[in-house]
Length: 449
Image 1 (cartoon, rainbow, N blue to C red):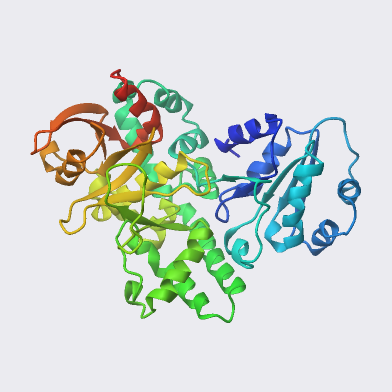
Image 2 (spheres, helix red, strand yellow):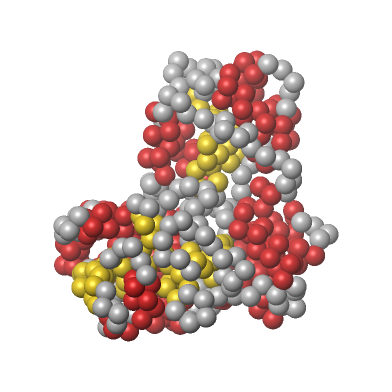
């Protein structure tokens, strides 16, 4: 299996003397168990438990002192404790509220141990009364693979090295990088799909992976909200909602479903908590803090572009496209941009937003927070004079830098708004989205990126 970037974050957590039990969150099949199993090889002792196993649940729920429980954990796996570090991985921990509560005691009584807990999809939300010990655990999100991880998986280490150079140096490799970014956009970032493509170079062969994943999500909704109308709404969204990726949506009668706003809203919240999608809300301010306007129409962004392409039936259109911004009404370009933006952050509560001025129709695809300032991002080709909404944002912004994501090479232009404000426009090729923090730092400093 290819290396995931989060492994470096886990290694830093291991070295932290004040580490807390770690809650690893992520949608089903983004690779949580695989990455922790790989991380476990760095410990002298690695103990894995899956709480879908009733015997494991009974073990953790024994009413005995924690030190005795740790001894029992070793014994249950038939392992002899070696000198050195220990990692205990508790998978599907949501199946045992008592084990969730136990995490605080690992933190307070056994700081010498490293403990990771994880769960998947809708199981995390079955019992809303269960809460993790506040202040005694930390959280980390595992997302679908980023473009950089995709390049590593398919063996393009040379292009990874290029992405680590100054942004303007990528121009000589632009066609290669855009070719592989288009492949990444078609395939998406689900590890099983990426691994299969790396092995076979066959895009069609991955369809079975997508089909199995989506069916598993539907089955989970049926299993954990059985007997409730919410099951039907969730299954409807998982069947037909993919076609609305990148669009502003209304909750009431979503996709002509006939379901009420309250029902659809509850289903979307469930799927958001399961990290399968996000309702991206607008803000009307050009300055921090970000205050989403949740009474206005949100955009629907799914967690993986490959699944969107497959479920919405638009893979052929994207495969044959020479300009991603024009594919599928531009929605796939927005979807993949949003996915790359989120991949830069492993915080659970990280959200994306777009800017929209009430009543006049001006709208910018995304806003990006960097060093306590907001920067507008437009996903669009074309000449600078056509970026009217972005220019409207800049007239009211504190910053003098804006970003255009496109399919052409990296450059920086100087643009003047109709009101006379000069600003620098970073023309950012899709494959450099993951470098945006660094590029902003260098452009702000007046250096070449």
